[in-house]
Each structure stands twice: as structure tokens, then as C-alpha cells.
Length: 201
Image (cartoon, rainbow, N blue to C red; front, side, top):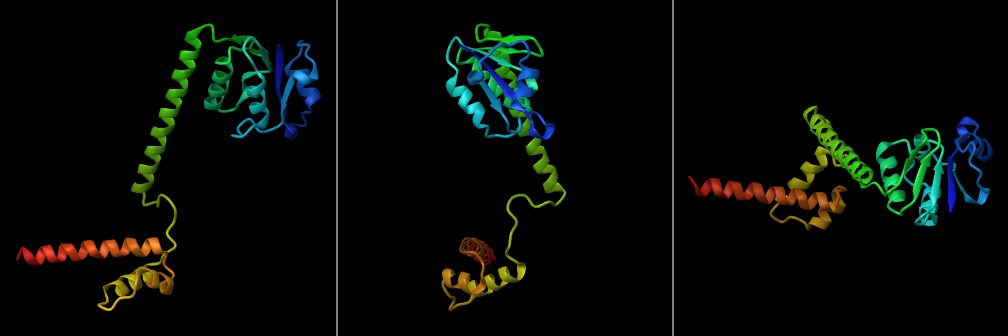
């Protein structure tokens, strides 16, 4: 069975009809066998892509206007194309006049390698970005909404001999219970170090 895939952009005043005419020029397919995607190619959730992948079966042929119509990001392009090829579907990109099948294992190995390389590069860049941000004093993770004054209030209450329960301190100070427990743990460690230091004298 032969199918077509077209992505149109309403922002560019593209319609399904103009998209089919431009992207699948010379390909004679009934409309019910053309998948028309109106979402952004960079969107993670593309319902038409999911429907297409569920429809395609071994031996089918899929015509796509061009590489960029399938996806904008190389990682997404490789992932979608690999999924299609692994279903034993032949993919033809009209503009580039390129055919891809899973018959040539070299192609799949190449795409696997590209995807692995890109993922590894992204992880490394992310790690470097986080490290540089930390060096620059940028706070990483969720911002803390507990002020220093609140922390000191919690510490004072926890150090009192007739101290209240952690839950009560949390309620009175407005500091999250998890933060109160973390502060209590810090105090316990500090007190343990103080006792160790005294015993060593």
C-alpha cells in the first residue's frame, strides 16, 4: 500500500490542498491515504505521526515531501525514520529524491550511531552548562522559597530544650516539613561534631 505524508503550516498560509500539490507533486494518491500534519515539526506530541506509525505495515511505501517536513530536529528525524524503517516500510523523500529501506543494515546502523552521538553530545553540553552555571553562582534546580530568617527561626526552635515537634515548628514558621527535617538533620550533624571535638580534647 502506498501512503503520503504532508506537513502544512497555517502560519505560512499553507492549506492541505496546497501542501499536497507542492510536497507530493506527481504522486497520485487518494486523500484517505495521505497523512496531513498541521502541528509544528518541533512539537513532541504529534497525533498524525502516531496515527501514521500505527497504520503503516510491512511492504508499504511512504512518500514524504522533504526531510524537514518529517521533523525539524535531527534527533526527532532519526527516531521517526528509524521507527518507520523497522516496520519494513520503504520511505521516499520527494524533494531529495532519496529512498530508505531497512534492507541495507548499514543505513540503520548509521542512524543508530547518529542518534547515539547526538544524545551523548546533548548530555555533555547539558552537564557543561550546569557546571558553568554553578561556577557563575547560578542556582540550579527549584528555587528555595524559605528565607534565611525562617531558617534561623526553625534552627532556634529545634535547639530549644523543650522544643516543639517538627510538624508544629513547620506549622508555626511556614517552612515546609521536608525543609524542617533537613535542618534538624543538619543540627544533629553539627551537634555530633561538637561532641566529637569535645571528647578529643
